[in-house]
Amino acid sequence: MGGWGIFFNIIILIGVVVLIVWAVKQFTRSNDTGSRSSGSSSQPLSARDILDMRYARGELTREEYQAMMQDIG
Image (cartoon, rainbow, N blue to C red):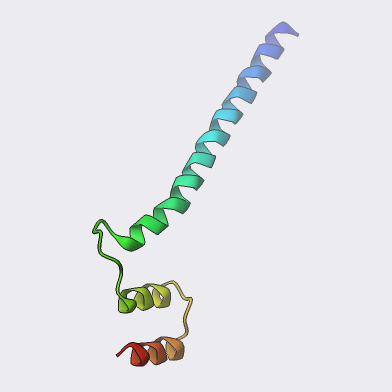
């Protein structure tokens, strides 16, 4: 049993490490999307940039996009 116990402990340890790596990747990826949208500059995004990104992500229909673009000029 001693040999098998060590084997299972190693498997559990590997599983925990894989789970931690996965969780860190998920966390950094979700934070990454916010930082990418603003870019590296310190200037805020324009209304057109925000509309373009929302349309590209599929949050707006074509009609909504065009109506909002007319609203902002």
